[in-house]
Length: 435
Ligand SMILES: Cc1ncc(COP(=O)(O)O)c(C=O)c1O
Image (cartoon, rainbow, N blue to C red; front, side, top):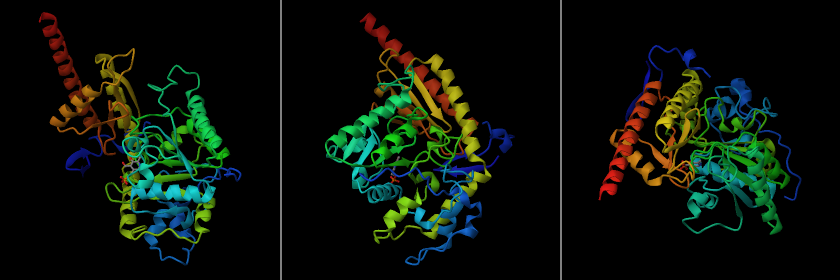
């Protein structure tokens, strides 16, 4: 058993006796061609073949090595039509902070398209900078409200949204909502620069968009002259198990125009990254206003990023996430049969949402109950929190080293808390009947 310490808790990296192999189960201007980000894939050998850095900036070799090829141990992030093309430094920028990555993506999109407006998903969160609060309905609804350049499309939520699991093609139906939002903006003379979405909307309630939704949306956005930005800040780096990037769940051929990465890239250390096509990067560079921030591309941060990628690879944490995630889903599924409050259990890899409901007919969010469960779990030294517009979705996004034993432990505690809660509700009802 290898152990790693995270946030004061000890977790098995691998389950005793299980070999790593056992874990692998699993504008007005024409829309740019989806020329695929010049990917990071190229460079298992990229450390050697990286083109010379642009003369105006001194760049530490460690930043180069990371940019050139260490972004995916699986060898194929952002792979698609552009895989295998050379990655240049203009194609990858290294802000030191995740919100900065999204702010830079916004600048890149605007510079490239010559447009200003942004389409976002309802309840989304993309960061704490003013520019990002403006594109985060989760925040701006409680602050200054929606700016005229921001357009909100419905969450592709097949459990509680307008198009549900019984819809013949929810991907196309939800994408048509984006088209409708774009058309209504255009009727007001607005021009779309970008569509921003988390590849799996997490603050929105651990939502798994139906496969095929992003490619459809990208078609609508690109025809309006905009670019598709995938925010992988929470969900990238193998967490979804089956793929290294969560947007790959949308179809192997789907490639966003810009991808932002953070959080897991540094395992707690502040480091972030933006990947894009050379066309977008060159449009940005053409202004002559280079990207600069004091700590951007710091060799220390890049060393941390490289170490994280090495650990992901060496310890096969992507396969581990697939294995432990499907085990956790199975255990939670067994609980669903027992506790009617568990309305929907959805997830991929170590990204799972447990949607608590008042009753199956209305699917009304069980907000207070979710709050109660979270506090009882905390008494048991298990930290979970809630997400979603109704704050009723228990979010499971544990460290990548979360083990099968950890999964058994958390589900056993959840079962005990729900059983106890149900008994308390029954005795209150009995008291009410007799009073
Ligand atoms: C999806 C997403 N994007 C961007 C950010 C911003 O990251 P940071 O707070 O590290 O700047 C967050 C933070 O929670 C996030 O969840």
